[in-house]
Image (tube, rainbow, N blue to C red; front, side):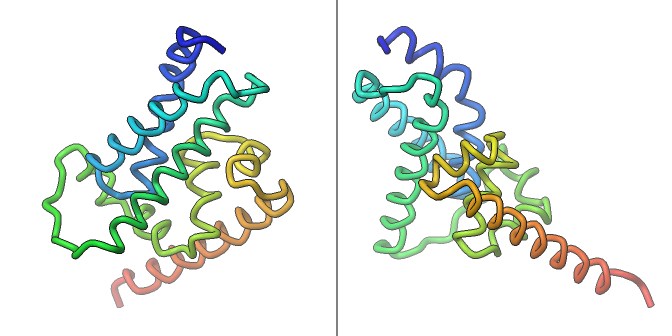
Length: 160
């Protein structure tokens, strides 16, 4: 894969990559930085990609690693309260985002990749480096937990 092909492929994926990073990191600036870093690392290694049909999965895997690196860096620094970012405020208000963030990490990742980044179950499994059956099982468990979470919210929100 040459640099022009790489640029064309990344252009098609940029929205999905940003959504994935934003869901992992929760902040617009951090998501943009992670996408930039992932694109840079992908560009450097694009000649190593053996199967071009898996480009989206390969780039998603690079992005996930960048997001995990950022989360590890955050743990080492003192947390400072962040001001809400205008572009992210609408999504932040959604109860779904909070419910997804409350999921355990092993269930959160497949949900983000499958339903917010638009990967198939097979691509999700490849990106997470787990068997396809495991990815499907984690998705089912996560959806069951999300369903329960929303049912509990509805019960408490009803006027008595």
